[in-house]
Image 1 (cartoon, rainbow, N blue to C red):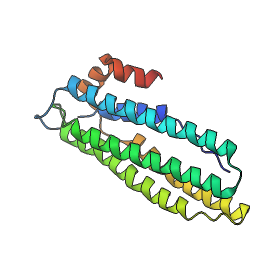
Image 2 (cartoon, rainbow, N blue to C red):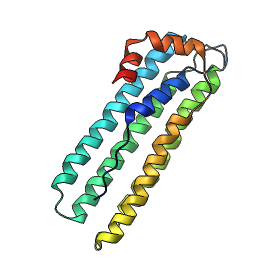
Image 3 (spheres, rainbow, N blue to C red):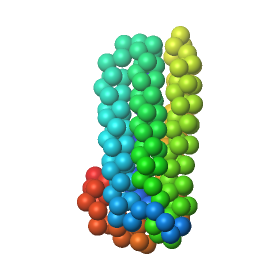
Amino acid sequence: MTRVRWTPRALVVCTLALVGCGGGQSGVGAATYVTSICGTLTTWKTDVESAGSQLHTASNSAKSLVEGKQQYVVFLNALVAATRQAAAGLKAAGVPNVNNGSAIATSLQGAFTRAGASLAQAAARARQIPTNNAGEYQAATSGVSDQFKQSLSSIGTLTPKNAELDAAAAKDPTCKALTTS
């Protein structure tokens, strides 16, 4: 069974870099916004890491391709749920009252919304992985893994930047913990 390793830390760092972007002059203050965003990202990171740990443990004890597939689907479903929950939390954070705040909030929310949709597609593909042939299983699992990694990597490719949000994130303990864990 293929094991996929990627680092949630890298995605969080890239996402925090986005939070340092800028639009609009109405909404929540920079410090309030980054506190909310970092809290959401902390929960997301914890959920993703937990799902990865559970997959690792389960895949080590899987006795068949059917069991391996079941665990992989459970893992992807957990990623879908965590990512959709993060998208909702990012939306609830509002729009930062900084230069380009609306564009920043929209970009960040959109990235997680798109990732959630793409992960849901990966989970649907995973449910179709054949389990009667190890070679076909391996090839199908690899294709699904590529899709889910692409889904998550798109979160880290966000732009624009904003110095006010960067400064607020640098002072926020939750944001600091995200970038150092």
